[in-house]
Image (cartoon, rainbow, N blue to C red; front, side):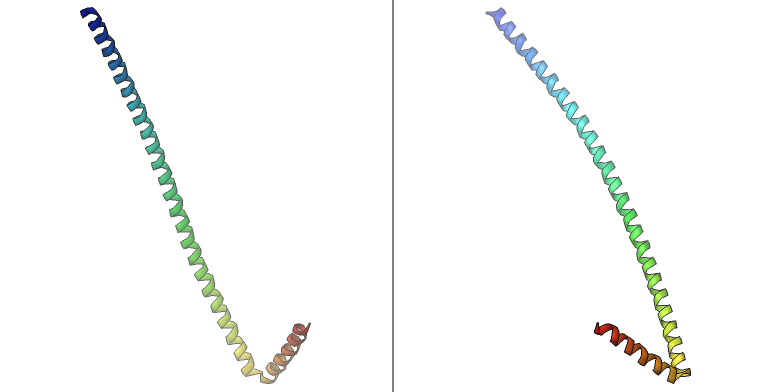
Length: 112
């Protein structure tokens, strides 16, 4: 029985060793895959953060440009109003005639 015991022990040892090697290879493969996934996640996060920064910068540029355009428009409107006031002061009768004519024309357009 001693030989049979030895064979069983040797067989068990080979199975144990093969299992250990398979587990080690699997761990190694899992670790390698996890490293690749982690690197991919980092790259994706970096790209996403970069895109978010660029979008934020672009939004800030557009907001600044919008403010500039608003300010320019307000300045032009104020200048136009100043010119209109000056015209009314210089030519009050013509201003009244223009206002009446514009009101009459607007009334005709809105009736239709």
